[in-house]
Image (cartoon, each protein chain N blue to C red):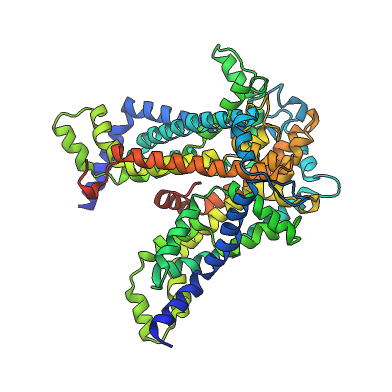
Amino acid sequence: MRASLEKNYQYQRSRSRIKPKKIIYHLLVGGFAILLLYPVLWLLMSSFKVSEQIFITADSLIPSPFVLGNYAQGWEGFGEYSFGVFIKNTVVFVIFVLIGHLISCSLIAFGFARLKFAGRGFWFAIMIMTLMLPYEVVMIPQYIIFAKLGWLNSLAPLVVPAFFGHPFFIFLLVQFIRTIPRDLDEAARIDGCNTFGIYYRIILPLITPALATTAIFTFYWTWDNLLGPVLYLNSPDKYTVSMALNMFLSNETVSNWGAMFAMSIVSLVPVFIIFFIFQRYVVEGISTSGIKG
Amino acid sequence: MNTQLRRNLWGYFFIGPFILGFLAFTIIPILSSLYFSFTSYDLFSSPRWIGIENYTKMFTDDPRYLHSLRITFIYVFGGVPLRLAFALLVAMLLNTASRAVGLYRTMYYLPSLIGGSVAVAIMWRNIFGDEGIVNLALAGIGLETVRWFGDPTAALWMLICLSIWQFGSSMLIFLAGLKSIPQSYYEAASVDGGNFIQKFFKITIPMLSPVILFNAIMQTIAAFMTFVPAFIISKGTGGPLDGTLLYSLYLFKQGFEFFNMGYASAMAWVMLIIIAILTSIIFISSRFWVHYESEGGR
């Protein structure tokens, strides 16, 4: 049966090769994809050109001469702070938010998905409502509160809220936990597990795929975050990568396009690496929960 | 300790972080924001009650605000439908058994992946420059080049293009939706002599409508709050001639550049109300175009 299926498949494939319809399809779909990605390719190739030539030779993708100087120049950063400092700051920022989201969202999601208590429906509805709340509404009072606490120009206002859950990820995890059979909880309870034990020993190991999705999107959103750092960080030693790029732009002169492009590419590399390693979680996360990518 | 109390305690132990966070970072800020919106407040002296003056100023005495509101509407209602249309079109093209689909799917998704970053906004700024590749391409196919940074309307469309460019995440959701439509529906339609257009409007659109509804709502809200591209592409000015002064950017400038915290809070509340109205309109209209299987259809 299998062999005949395969044979049939090969037959169809060999037939499909000569179909002009297929060729047109690939030309159209592939060509359009390349057209969409062309700007990124242009940015990448331009980062290897001499700054003065970037716009003179904008019609060509091939850098001639091929130079790495833009990367060296961009890496020097501003004043005494190299781009490495900005990357380190961003990594610290991301790690704190990651820890915060993974712990708080899994606890909260377990509570909503598995425990029966008075007021559960009410709080769940509140949680869903906060999903749609524009950040702008809370932005100014939050700023004032953090200013009163003396937290300005520190990471605290950016990472502390992460330890109190994020509605998107709570919702994602709740949906995932609901697919796990309750028999497992019952069995563990008979074996003497208390509620926290069920969360920690049974549920947590089983929701790893959803936690991976949470971690990946937390990384993306935090890595790209500009508004938060612009509001709360004002000394260059604390700048994140996105703020440093913004600095490049405000100091833009004819001669440093190359450095700005090179550091833009550097800022995209981790995003691409994470995507290609965890592609499956990313695609499933978006397809099943509608998370904004 | 009785079981009921025990259950409640465990429940609140687990969702406790959410409740604390909600009180500290959501409900207290929302209520203070509402209060500030009726005051004149510059962050350094204490807020002074001025009644509804902020709100009346917005609609009668601040042409810049009305302009910002207008271009934000153009941005949202120009960008979101086009983005969803592209997403659906490409999803349909990719809904085949071809072996290259995995690769294409990744390629179309990549712009969404990196689209929110400062790097991409910088890239966008540069490809639309006077000597950028967009103008080279326009000249190449014999069209007139555009001074994207000289004309406010052109600058706004440059932002809209950036939003459309990122249709990939919606495309993934539509693709998942398309795969869940039973193939037998299309076969039955073919037997009855249905053509492509009929299948699209009688099967694909109705079956996908809940997914389209969800996307339309989420994307409208997100588009209304767009900040990074406008901020980076205009270097924080909202220029040329306020052409890219999207609502969030103007709110940010009022709050953190002019320190009109009261006025900015009032703007945030109007934004919340507009988003609530838009969402309800989409929801109410959905009664006429969204089809749910479990209700047996309409």
